Image (tube, rainbow, N blue to C red):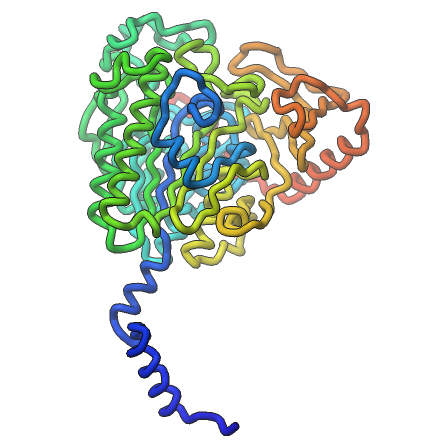
Amino acid sequence: MKGITKKEFIFSIFILSTLFGFYPFSTSFAQNSDKAKPNVIVIFTDDQGYGDLSSFGHPNIRTPNLDKMVDEGQKWTNFYVAASVCTPSRAGLITGRYPIRSGMASDVHRVLFPDSKGGLPAEEITIAEQVKKAGYQTAMIGKWHLGHHEQYLPTNHGFDYYYGIPYSNDMDQSEDNPQRGNYINGYFEFADDHIPIEYYNVPLMRNTEIIERPADQNTITRRFTEESISFIEKHHDQPFFLLLAHSLPHIPLFASEEFIGRSDAGLYGDVIEEIDHGVGLIIDKLNELEIAERTLVVFTSDNGPWLVFKTHGGSAGLLRAGKGTTWEGGMRVPAIFWWPGSINPEIVTDIGSTMDIFTTVSHLAGVPIPDDRIVDGVNLTPVLMSDGESPRKEMLFYRGATVYAARKDNFKAHFIIEGAYGQFEAKQVLETPLLYDLSTDPGEKYDIAENYPEIIAEIKEMVKRHQQYLVKVKDQLAERESN
């Protein structure tokens, strides 16, 4: 058969387009190519434990909107953060890299403070900067905690819009706060609905300007949701990326008046149920705007619960310990992926990490992964959108700038153990590592090291390979204004 001419080819395309309503050379096609890039919303809570949603096992906290996301999407049960405290965990999410690589992990100070000098370096490539290359509109709403000086704010890291607080909601404590600095043995004895907002002089910012100080934390969850919905409404006809990082349920706890006393689980439950309500409003808006089927929504937490604060600190469920530690309760978090019509609904027991969001979203947006640095995140779309397996088979557990533990497949070895901020066990460098099979013992109760010396050797070799490729960078958390 003779080949067809260019003119005949174009004519045949015209005939097909007429029959099927497809116009490949029109302006509308160019717009539709943008619509093929999914919107992405990442909802990131603060200090929410693995067991703090009803769909993850809590008997008294009602989270119907998140539970519906689980039913319609994927529930990941082996999902990890890059660190068990705020700043390095957020650095891992936003860069797709272990925070040690960016200087956002430190053995001097574990997080940034209001008098810290440093922040996320400009040379780091954020997830917002990645999707900007594909024409996305970007917003960061909520808690940042990657540097409060202007050069470190979200607007200098790829975000078109920022509305939120620059660090944790318990910082900038006032002199008359009776709980000032009392983190180790302290417990907030205030009446659950009467914590004065003036005890925490935390600024609320819009872009680079402080618009409220102290931030009214009683209404902050509601306002973060409202700002998110406003951003979605404004940009629903173009691809967008929204990071909604709630500043709660990090202590001190606050909730809007209509949610105080609503939960059967005290003030902590009230806070979670208000966050869940906000998630429902966002999902409703996506449906109303008819963009739900081209929007990926991810819900997860920055680390485990702050157990020292008892009922104000949440629960890790059956997992061991909580925030600040490298036990499962500090590093394993609830995770939900929702994208109607694209994600295969199921419970996923493969390993995943918040660092993988960077790589996965880059893939969905059609943006190449930077090749001038090591990116630790992997692409999870084989699990999200088909019947494949997660490429992640390994996970390192850093405390500060030191590897305390590591997981390979189902086995997790602990080389150093230590409690959260001086709680529980004192620091121990173990001559013989502890070893747990997380498939049968997710609570890390039964040490099986003596039965599997070869597994410990494999995990040690895995850590050694990782450390060989570390490049020393400036510790961004060490310097403070008083230094």
